[in-house]
Amino acid sequence: MSVSERRRVSDRRETLLGDQPGSFAVGRYVRVTPMKARRVVEMVRGAQVDDALATLRFAPQAAADVVAKLVESAVANATTTEDLERNSLVVSKAMVDEGPTLKRFRPRAQGRATRILKRTSHITVVVQPAGNTTRTGGTR
Image (tube, rainbow, N blue to C red; front, side, top):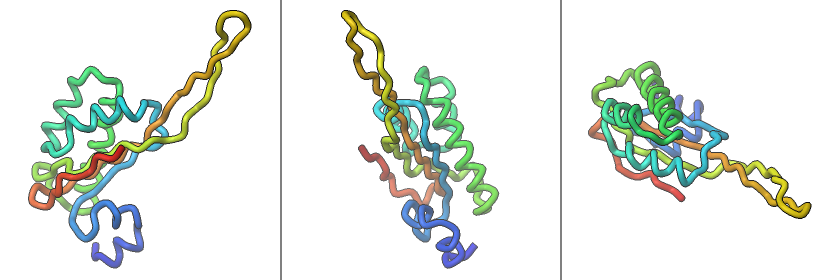
């Protein structure tokens, strides 16, 4: 796929990868708080894909399952659309942005109610061949 075709396909791809080879996957409205998801994402950023999946498989955090699915999806996108080898892929960028917050109320003592904030996350995982990684990505 040429660069001009890529630009037509996705502006998001242009902002994440530019002209470099690679692929990405985005999980939106994930019901995990961004702070907890960032802990998991920091474990795999910069790691080889197979090492990252092994780490996520045994991680006790609930967000590890979601991030593992996103890494698998990004690898599948890279192997099918970009014709890249799975063995050469590295998690070059991994970002967690804050999604919308669900506001709920919980009854408390003496007729009061307190607000419960159920936070969501938008998680982005970018994989690239080992020579093209830039080791950036964490946003807060």
